[in-house]
Length: 306
Image (cartoon, rainbow, N blue to C red; front, top):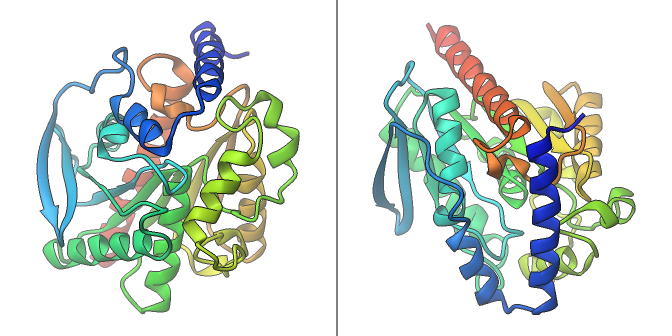
């Protein structure tokens, strides 16, 4: 049974987002609202923040006081490829840093519609390659939520194609893997999803991101890619979200292709509920498990090299 706090958060969020949609906000207003976040959500303790510009891309290092060993995490923020930023996702990324006891680098990739595919992917690959250069022989994990999780997958696929050293692990929250939007829960879960009660938001975002390209393109919709070449992957998703089948079908396909993948479906949770980490136990548990998964696989990568 869901905790009382999570049930209250779900009802409040559903009400808040429904009221916001009635105002028909512009994209700029949505971006501003996402960046402002909630005054109830504070940063975890003992995290240092260092602003940095890398290849012209704004980023931040989020470093926990207690670091267990070599290894870094690149965090890809969500926002349907059209909004979201360091500001909107700094807190979640910082909690993941604390859980994994590893530094996290979060950055602002270019957003659609101003910069459609493959701009975000190019930014993300450039950041990854810069980390390889700056931190040779240090294992890297990719983590992200929603569209950011889809982007992390596209990066891993691109690295394989370009014969660039692969990340050691992928930690994904509510990944958006199918921009065609023809998975069953895109419809069947709409009534209970606080974020996507109808397909219009995702449909318009997908169109803005793809900008006329085929939505089946494997770097736009990783569900249609060869998934056997991905590193160890852990997926967390809620059963109250329209993207539930994006996670389930991706998992089933990757597993059928002999990929190293695990999926955990959280009852009564919604899209990227982990943003509320620190406020109720289901969010805390997910972030803790994702952090442990990353730490374990990065430590394993170090031992394998030795």
